[in-house]
Amino acid sequence: MSAILLSTLNARYIHASLGLRYLAANMGELAGETRILEFVLQNRTEEIVEALLAAQPRIVGFGVYIWNVTEITRVVALLKCVAPEITVVLGGPEVSYECNEQEIVRLADYVVTGWGDISFPKLCRELLRRHPQPQKIIPGIQPPLSDIKLPYALYTDDDIAHRTLYVEASRGCPFKCEFCLSSLDKTAWAFDLDAFLAEINTLYLRGARQFKFVDRTFNLNLKAGIRILEFFLARLDDKLFVHFEVIPDHLPDQLKELIVRFPAGALQFEVGIQTLNPEVQALISRKQDSAKTFENLRWLRHESHAHVHVDLIIGLPGEDIESVGQGFNRLVALKQQEIQVGILKRLRGTPIIRHTAAYDMRYTPYPPYTVQATDRIDFSTMQRLTRFARYWDLVANSGRFPHALELLLADDPFARFLAFSDWLYDTTRKTHQIPLDLLFDLVLGGLKSALAADADAARAALEQDFILSGSKEMPSFMKPKNYLPAPKRAKNPATRQARHLAE
Image (cartoon, rainbow, N blue to C red; front, side):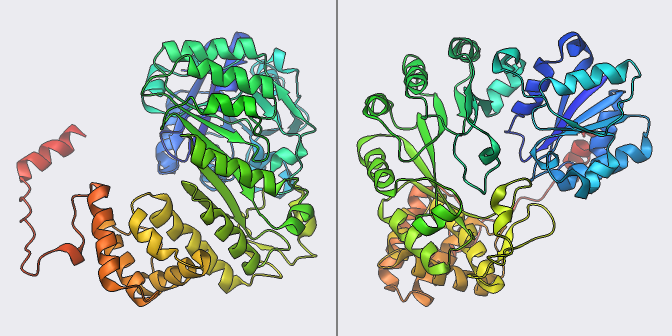
């Protein structure tokens, strides 16, 4: 039994909510009455509500994000239907802006907007004293970071063993990119680095080896970046993995000297490129030295062992398909390990909305508010580009097709992969649930049919890729003509019944 439950729906089990742990760590005298209960998007609404009610809470606080608001809305609706006496409090970026337009806000009792570390515990104290608050929407108070207790002790041994541990050495961002909620911050604020590293060291001593920094600007503060890299260098082993978001045009020599000392597999950098069109950059208030960015990306690729993941956004105001293709080709030429192609989403509260009328931006009227058309890219073309992004993930970012990719991307990578993407969709009418063995066959078919590649060269490339993939399910083009699959073993009804009884 817990008076207060903190809950959210994560995309996958491997994700552990840092926000909920911050709230729990700062509950003060209510910490003993507070419990975290996380779910995943695949959990049924009824199962979630049943689990929440089993704890007999008086207050349930939900962390609401663009990716889970639809599912949490159903949870809140059912919870208020079967247990209206429970107070529901919402927080998180999705409900911190445009509150009055949202069904989930109508269903809930209170919403804490913005920073909840101090404001949520304060609200809970009042509610448990049976002092209802006069206002439903409660602006979160942003305290000095020194007033916020760090949450890392609340990662359990199970979290450490099986989940990604999210950490942050700073909050906020000094840049003003209009598609990002961090553009609303006035600057970046740093936690006390000694205290932060002491907490991370404790996690390390408990066995943690995978750390994902959520700082928007990890390498903004050179001295802090150096200390953090030195901290992990002193603890290198073959299991250590650290992920950072980095500013692409700011990589001083002092950082480079440390980066080169990390072995392969230890460092991953997420580099936000978004667009390489200078007119679009100016339009969305993004400051980026593209020449310096490319210099740093080349250095990372050729002089370090870091895995580099670069981001490109399709659908920004003022950008047409030709501009997208030019930027994509420039990134492909750098031979980065991963190019994440994303479609613009209109996050609530972001300044990108100021371009809606001028550039005829059309977004889905439901989460995740993905752009569907602009004055430069019509709806049908945007659908093609959305499939392009999905298939790029399946084929290129998966790392399973290195040899075939050379044939797919010859000459004009964007135009060729778009042609392959169109052929793949016309052939399958699917973007998901494509088995790997079938995907190998489809890549071969696309190379021959859509791109007129030499059949023998394509087959040889895919045979090499299949061997490297380690997959056991052989694609059809590699099977002998007289190949017969091994017969499936019949299921023992008694065993099946016993399994269901055990469940």
